[in-house]
Length: 343
Image 1: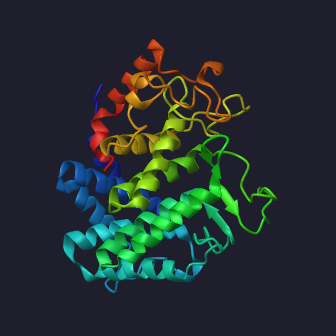
Image 2: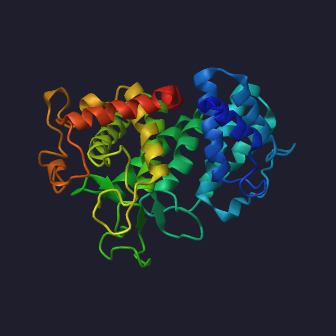
């Protein structure tokens, strides 16, 4: 039986990849671009850069226009692949990439916002803030601000994510709701809070990645410290919500919900966030910070509001058990070859 290394698999996948929407600029391609950037940064191998440049060049013309992109759609998802443009500008200085990045920055200048400040998710989803939109837009705004010499954009991105966290935070669980509707018009919106009813694992995964990427890129200061502390608390809660095989659920805090299941995308996102946060030295990111680690009880086991105690849920693990330590060692062993990708 022929086996393939994980990096060779990534290489073959990128080689055979076709643009997700027939070439139109979109966040799905942007997710792949983020992976190729991480591989290039972690390994220094030019094959990842060549894949990235080839794919982006298929969507950026000689005038710096983006294929299938219309600024007045005000689709926050379209901003994510702009991080690849910032990366390519830094590598090449090519004016095409800078013009394309400028176009996305222009979108954010006029993109509608809720009264509290964060951007609407899309024009077709008015008055709504979604957690995934924070990942789509704010790390780009921060990185573009550094590229363009506009630190005020980074400050704006920080203010927006902290405000969005305030709007979507659910104190009893320590988690964040996927959506906030300031107009209270959506069927899912609570008439008092405007929040969606469930804690969706994948949306919290987008959020965790946005938080850790921004913590890494932000300059030292009180705002960065605030965001770091919120990320630390989120990671601590998430550590207590893993399934027995080391994954996270689609509805992350309802293991008894009929039809609920372990969700692979959310698990990959959380793995990224935990690994990168551990590299940055953020509390709550390493196994030693989890329940029972270092002799310190974690809030998930010992009385943080209504967080479900580990001991009351058979499919959640307590760090005091041998099985937890075994599962944790398996999880780290599986992810060890990818540890440098969370950069």
